[in-house]
Amino acid sequence: MKISEILAKKKTLSFEIFPPKREDETFTLIDRTIKQLSIYKPDYISVTYGALGNTLSNTAMIARTIKDNTGAEPLAHLTCVASTTDKVDSVCTELKSYGVENILTLRGDIPKNTDTPIFSDFRHASDLASYIKGKFNGQFGLAGACYPEKHPEADNLTSDIEFMKIKQDAGMEFFDSQLFFDNEVFYHFLLKARKAGITVPIIPGIMPVTNHAQLDRMIQITGCNVPLKLRNYFDRYKNDKAAIEEIGLIFTSYQILDLIANDVDGIHIYSMNKSDFISKLMDNIGYVASGFFK
Ligand code: FAD
Image (cartoon, rainbow, N blue to C red; front, side, top):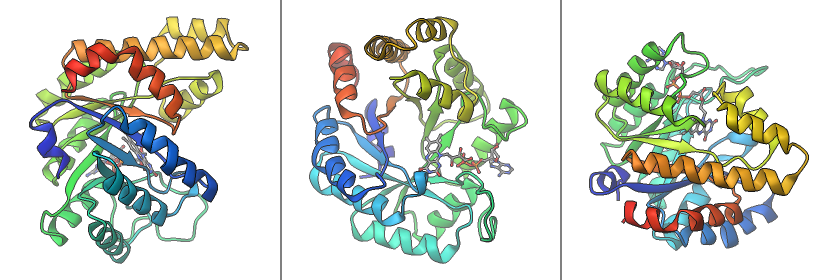
């Protein structure tokens, strides 16, 4: 089923997972992580592509496992930077053969120090979406990425949202957002996006913070704003792992409850494959979540 059809009927709960580098970790992901996440009846589980140097077959194979073994729709990520139409055709054909119906169309980060032509067949995620839509006759449900605090390469939020409109026009039927820690930032972005003519669902992406180094890394990669309170708590308990985890759990629970109270289109959780932590989080917001995602 296309995820856009689910979104037309309900608020969605979704998780992102990534294919591990090592084969034994892939077994754990399939045997334990996906099973544990499935308990919370996610509408879809997205699987990253290319991140951490992983290969496509892992993404497709994991998407297939989700399709065959859980009630969730897999959303296979696919990047187009330094790729070709032939490669995209073969990935989409493989996904189709596994019954995977939804693709998150992305450009991907521009690789450094590579001899591969970077923009041979595709320049932007919107090029990938229009190509797949045309070539596969609308057989795939397509989604895209959006950035509440603008994409790092964008001049400003207004121009970034104008490009988001191009993505929507190219066939992206909903957006999963980059992570953010300040909900006010997301509400401001949502308002601007709606004013600019983005009519499809925009799902906030939430990354539970479980350690200090991870928070610093996320700020560095995404340039996201961190509320002073969270920064102060994390600095105060910098060397206390259990305290940081407890703060992360409470902060993320509250962040999600606030988004739910503001009636967002769904919640997308970057699980980082930490299903034990996600279980604690989902149990923490169990009552409110069960009413929202029903
Ligand atoms: P684009 O939409 O092409 O945007 C890139 C830049 O170009 C932006 O600055 C935008 O403003 C501008 N732009 C967009 N369209 C146009 C246009 N038509 N004309 C001119 N300028 C334009 N990376 C991975 O490698 N693997 C993953 O699995 C992965 N999953 C992700 C999931 C989510 C939810 C998010 C938010 C990001 C993910 N990324 C992933 C990271 C992503 O690939 C990078 O952020 C990348 O730099 C941009 O990808 P994009 O699809 O947003 O690109």
